[in-house]
Amino acid sequence: MTDLKQSIFLRTKEDIESIEKELEKELDPYLDIVHDIAGHILFAGGKRIRPLLMVLCARLCGYNGTFAKTLSVIFEYLHTSTLLHDDLIDGAVLRRGKPAAHSLWDNSIVVLTGDFLFAKAGSIAAESGNIKIMKTLSDVYQKMAQGEIHQLLNKGSIDISEEEYFDVIRSKTGVLIEGACRVGALLANASEQEEKAVALYGSWFGLVFQMIDDMLDYTADTDSLGKNVGTDLREGKLTLPVIYALKKANKDDRSFMEEIISNKIFSLEQFEQFKQLLIKYKGLEYVEGLAKKYIAEAVSALSIFDDSKTKDTLLMITNYFLERKE
Figure 1 (cartoon, rainbow, N blue to C red):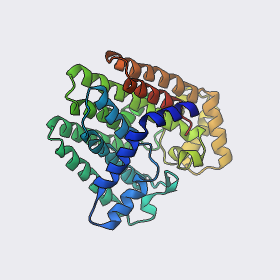
Figure 2 (cartoon, rainbow, N blue to C red):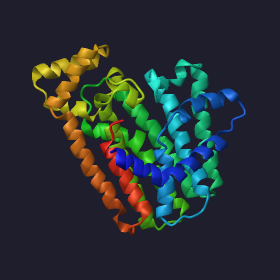
Figure 3 (spheres, rainbow, N blue to C red):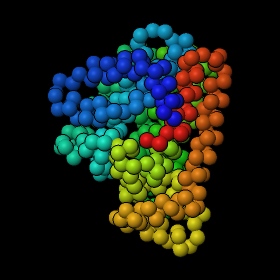
Figure 4 (cartoon, helix red, strand yellow):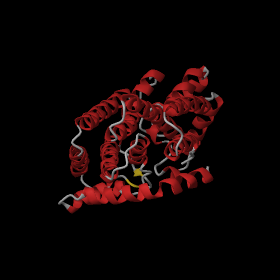
């Protein structure tokens, strides 16, 4: 994995550096506090996967202009906007290894900073002069908001189904990654077939991205994850490893798991017991197997494109995020 990560870094170093410059340049609020709050998360070491995917998909579809780097930052601004809002809603303590913004600044100002980032993304999208790009961005944000509401309605529910879980992550995470890939194609004036292909790639990859992220809440440590492990459990969010294990558990084990989920205040020892039940009932193994199938679908979606360095990089990225441990 270290070799793969290094290879991706070397291939995308120039793109990432350009994206970083555009993120700083385009932010430019007239109030310093807005820059401070937005930058607290925005420049705290995010992977930039969404803007990078947009740039790569545009290039895959034949785009060779300079506006792609500027346009790509809308997806990092949108993502950061949702993080500011979600951390406040969830009462999160850490984000990317730093205190959550709402613990450092007034809640109202944090919410409004998230709103500013959303508006900024829309302003940059308008610069493209492409109504399809602006419509895609609007659709993405509507779906993301509804995904968050759907998750809140299910908070603490023991009976959430796999179908509901996928509805939530498709809306909360999948549509933004799918949207980034689609906008890359739209910027390149790609054919309808190419647009559908990269959007499908993004849709499958987005599901896997969130599935693995949810699994890391039980397999990673706080330092590598950048937030406290067990956060999903404490917030009453049932993710796929738990949903599957609950379905398979015997009466006593299920009773223990339900008690932990309901109480939300548990010791490290109890959390370790909970994790062992996820292993016992193959919840983590199930997620890994399903993620591999979905990655295969993402790879298949790009089969219409000729082999190239850009296509190879996209495939390397999917493999890395499938196997990532942090």
